[in-house]
Image (cartoon, rainbow, N blue to C red; front, side, top):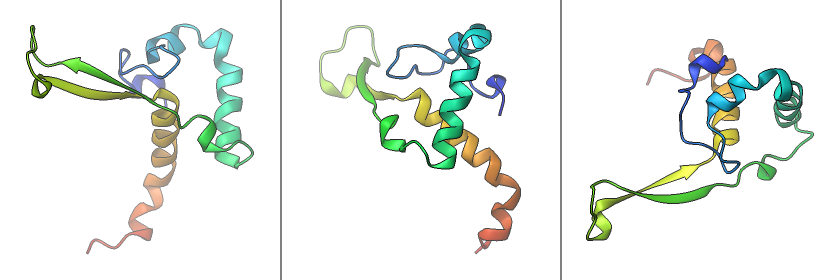
Length: 101
C-alpha cells in the first residue's frame, strides 16, 4: 500500500495528524511506522494498543439547531491504515476463500 492510496487530508487519528503529515515526514518517522505495522501484523503487538478512537461531532449545516444537524466521525488513522494493509494483502486470495454465493 502506498500513501497515495489514502487521501492526504483524511480524518486524522487520535494523534491529530492527517496522512499528509506521514507522507511529508516519512524520512523521519518511516522506520518506526513500519516497525509498528510489522509488530501488529506478526502479532507481537496487540491491536488493542492502537484500536482507540475519538468520536467527534461535526456540523452538517452552518448554524445547527438540533442533533439531526450533526454527524459523528471517528478518528482512527492507525487502525484504518492497518486494516487497509491487511485487505490489500488479502485481495489476491479472497476469491479462493469466499464463494460468489
